Image (cartoon, rainbow, N blue to C red; front, side, top):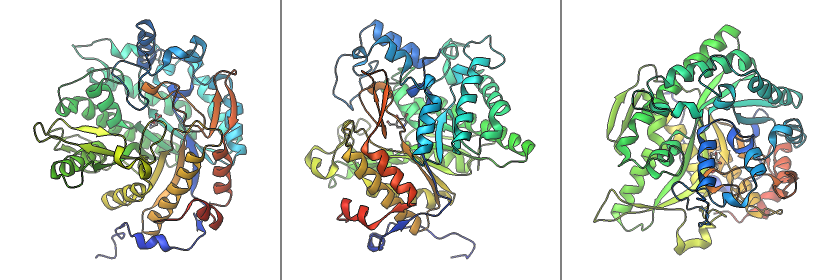
Length: 490
Ligand code: IFM
């Protein structure tokens, strides 16, 4: 192999015999992540319109958690108008929440800037001053706590007015969508560019495309006929990413400051439900490629090439527009196919036959820490770029949240082992700092290191995992005691 090429990372279980402690470098970035819609007060956006519709038509009957039903939000009717409007009441607690994160030793905070808060109506050709003042408070609180701001530009929501049809199209597919997007990105850069060293342009574009345009569980609640119909949306998101990358780099050059840019890609391991079934195996491979890697490959090569979406489309200005690979890792899904109709398959959140080892969380998602190491290595081998884990977490509502504590130790151990084999992972962001609104799952799924007591004026109460995370940050990794407590290891 050429000495100029970085070495390939392979998942070597022998690395598991590495003796503790597992220490991370001093410049490894430890943080948490949130998103505007999930914690902030309501804005004039597509999700707020969806929520209103859900309430009006009472589409919130109790469903099984983890099985979102198109057009529904799980148990939304159980929560008062005040809670639905304020979400976590972050708006009046920005300073306290971020001071608490700083006191817990967090060094970074990932959050998103709401497009609708800056541009609430199409009449706004300039950003709304109140919206700017709001994010100013966040940047100021982060500066006080000496925390690095990691900004996400698009985290699932867009202004309601973008959904009025233009030339028969709406949302990202409108002919003027990129014009408006550019206006938003330029405004963010003009006002906050100075304080944005790491930027994530898009959060989980494939989740957005699948949930919004195939499953109908996220706005715009469409159920298109198949993955090929996602191409216009996916291609437009790639164009939006390429455009933001160029604007961010131009802004950084003007300021004489570097900026590191990437996206946050949702990662799952897709496993065949029946290992002996060749169709399950092939389908699982195809879905993983489509859901996890096609988008990142496109940014790498400049061409959206996908078997599942049946497309090969060059996107001008896209190639090489990521400085890091951002991954959000949440475990393993299972694929069950059918010979009678190979394009219709089921995706299971866990395997009912091995619930013991899958340890499904409160949403039924299987835990699979080993897949984390595999995904980090795969990302390294594909792109040879720095990696940030921009999300990792679980739904665990207990005060003594043992599942979240276990998840932290198990996943950080896998991250350490991936680094050992060459994956250049530079930071870890736990999802999430506080409990929040989990999209079609409503308020029921609790992902916070810090509990939000919705019945008690949104009071904050750190869960046991919050102290564990602080301990890990303070000692820059996992000590023998922790590894022993959560072992034995495979
Ligand atoms: O809450 C979401 C977040 O908005 C995007 N990543 C996954 C999280 C948990 O489902």
